[in-house]
Structures are given as structure tokens and as C-alpha cells.
Image (cartoon, rainbow, N blue to C red; front, side, top):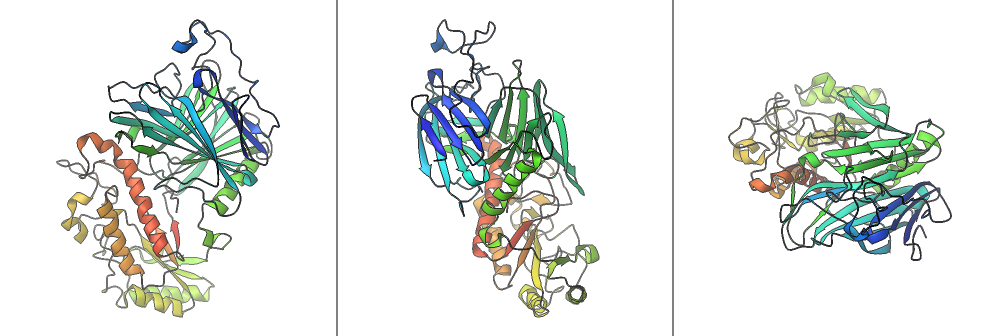
Length: 533
């Protein structure tokens, strides 16, 4: 059993082949993190020390016992406003306007198999035995509930986490903080490794000691992007590539994220990772649930190499679509650098013929094949083949490429719209922009409002008509601008804080529709923006 609960000690233990992760139900129902590291045989309930802290707050139930302090107790999933002053895992605005959420243990259950998250990608149960642990926490005053969900993949030393935030009360609540995971460490002798970048200079590692106060890497661009990657490593100060303790956390999420490491005055380190609270204000009506993205966690005592191998295996065997596992990606040529948008069919055929002679296996037609797309100022949003450029149409051109013995791929950027396009002229309110304010332009394009189902469905219908007879082997999916002027014409003023996350949910819905309709097509998010496809 990889998930166990010891009733006598009220300790949960999540064991993988080489690691153990433990927490317990502590005094007054608080959930206390105990241990994460090398696999151990017994419980680690002996580790917490209770001492009196003269200037720390105490729960009301503790009476004159001043040894229970939430600012010192390493909570498994801390709320906000009730004396834990470190970065919270969840925060809300209650129906009465207060912002406290005090989470206490209620119940749990252990399930066979891997959970799923509604509308969001997560690691899948292909091969390997998963177990799921669900732990329900509740605020006794407001009936707000948070269900902590853990997935355990024993063979790869992987633990996944997400949280389901449920309004069990009678008044509407607003969620303004929703992290997927929280990990605590009883030391400040750690380094934080994050990954930054810029165009043409992606994914650079930066290692820095943790310090008193917060270190946050995040994105408010509407996308995760190359500027900051939604993953981080906490490791021992002496950790190297092949030795030392390393803890990796990666979010399976393409939207605004935040990862924060904080050290308090007792030299404890807390790491939280989830949706960026700066761009989240989610209306939660009575009975409604908000689900956070999945966080993938791993530990290795064999340095950065051991840790990264764990994550690589998780992605390769449990995130990549099963039909592409262990398949080599074809050697391809893309016409962009040769022609950019200015091309015709015979020009592309000439490039493909020469590439075939050199041993290239796939030809990918880039930007410029659709609508009015004669330059970068027009055409995005109209996903119909430009027959002036490609008289054979997509299907006919694909056949010519296939007849050469090459595979065929196509470029799309379905989240974008040009103001000079049929789609924008017919539906200007389908773009993300603030009424009465001139929109910010980037690459002379706007972003479509994928928080609206009708927009997602309209884009899918266009792409489906072009793809269905094309015999496609590959899609290059670009996303070439950040989100600005965040506003949806379909949401009232008090719910505009939902736009960014709803946009990502709409994006994943489009991806799901396309990959379901064309399961044999390799979809790849390329260029500058990180995508979970």
C-alpha cells in the first residue's frame, strides 16, 4: 500500500519506492506536515516540538496552553487570517466581507487509481499503479471546505497534488488565493532554483539561497511563458547534479501562476505553488467548487539528476498522449525562415522537394496559408485556406507533400485575432479588450476570449473543416503575445477576476476537442510559450 493512515497516531503516510511523505491530524484538528524525504519505515510524529512562544498567537481552543502556534506549526494546507502569517495556500473573501479561513480536519478516504481534475490536464494512469488520498478540511464557522487530493505513483517517486475549494455555506464567497500544493521544511539551509528566459534565450537556471521573507516567481501574462517557468526546485545548500537532497515541483498549468518560497523568523521554509492570486477573484456561489491545477512533486537524494529523471519519466509516460510514447519525432523542415508569410504553393513544393533529397521526413507549412493573411497585420481568426496562395487547398497540398513520401504539418495560432479579419468584423466583442479603451496591440493582434464557449466552438468548427480531409500528421501551435486589457464582455463587473483562469479552461477545452477529433495528429506547442499539449 502506497497510502496508509495510522489511526493510533493519526498519521498519513504516502510512500513511493524511495520516498516518504507524512502529515498528521494534530491538536484541534489542524493538519500538520511532518516529513518529506528518503523513505522511512515508521511514522515521523516525533519530529514536531511544542514549546511556549511568548509573542505568538494561539487558537482559542488552546486556552492557557501557549505551545500551539499556527505561525510555527507547519500546516499541510494553511488558510489565512487566523495567526499563520506566512504565505497561505488558500484565501477567500467570505459572505460577510471577512477574509479568514480556518481549516480543520473532517474526514478522509483512500481510493485505488488516479483522480482527474475537471477541465484541466493532469498526469494520466497509463501504466503503473496509482493510489489517491482525499482529505477534507472545513472552516467550522463558514462551512468553507477544502479537499486536499494526493496521487501517488510509487514506481517513479511521484506525488501529485491539487485542491478542491467548496463553498458549503449559504452566502457567496470569492476565492482570491488557490494554491495546489504547500510543502514545509524545518530549516532555512536551502537553495531555490527557478527558470527564467526571454525570446531566443529560454529556460535559464537561476540558483539562490532562500532568505527571510518571500521569493516569488510568477506570471501575470495570461500564460506561463518563457519569462518564468511554472516549476521550481528546493535543494540542500550542498546539493549537486549527482548528490544531495532535491525537491522538484512543477505545475501542469499554462496560465498565470505563482510559486513562492518563504522563510519565517523560526527559520522554517514554506513553498507554495498554484494559480497567481494577483489575477484571481473567483465567485463561488453556495455549493460551487473551484479546482486548482495539478502540482507534480518529487524528491531525490541523488541530486538534481535523480530529481529531473523522476520528472522526465512522469511526463514521458503519464502526460504525453499514450500513442506518442517512445515515438521519435520526425525530422522536419519549416518554411518560415525561407518565406515568412510571402509564399505560394509551388514555392513550398520546391522547398519540400529539396528537403526530401536531404533526408528530411516532414514538411511543416507555417503562417500565411489562411484568410487575408498577406502580411502580419491581417487574417488571424479566419481559418480558411487562401486559394490564391494554395490553389490545391489544404487537402490537395497535403496530398502533394505525402506523394513525395513526406509527412505534412501545419501552423496555427487559434487564440489570436486580427482586427482586419472577417471574424473580428463580425464579432468584435469576442476579443479580450476593455470597452471604451483602445486595446494594447502586440504583433498587431488581439487575443480571443476563450472564457466563452461560443468562441471556442467557433474556432474549433473552422479548424475542423480545414483539418478533416487534410491527412495531417503534425500541428505547430503558436501563442505569440501576452494577455493585456483583461476583460470579458460575457461576464459582469464583479466576475472579471475570473477571466484569466476561464480563458485557460477554454484553451484546454479546445485542445481536448481537437486532440479527440484527430488522435493520430501530433500537436506540439512550439516557439516561445510553454504549453501542456
